[in-house]
Image 1 (cartoon, rainbow, N blue to C red):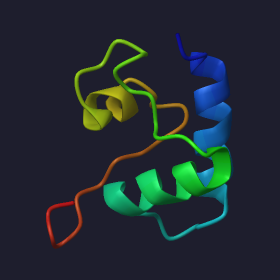
Image 2: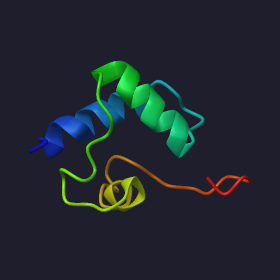
Image 3: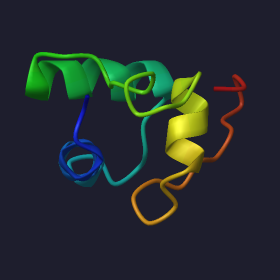
Length: 69
């Protein structure tokens, strides 16, 4: 089982490196580059990455870009 606090810490590290924001695909790639693993949304009880990120408003703010991502 993944540690949610560690995932939050790693997501913060990825997001703080880019002030202008990231697409979901770029966030996944940057997280994997940093940790060597994909964001473990299913292990944390969420069916989608989007659902996991929506459950972390203190870490992530989601905005839809022009491309819908």
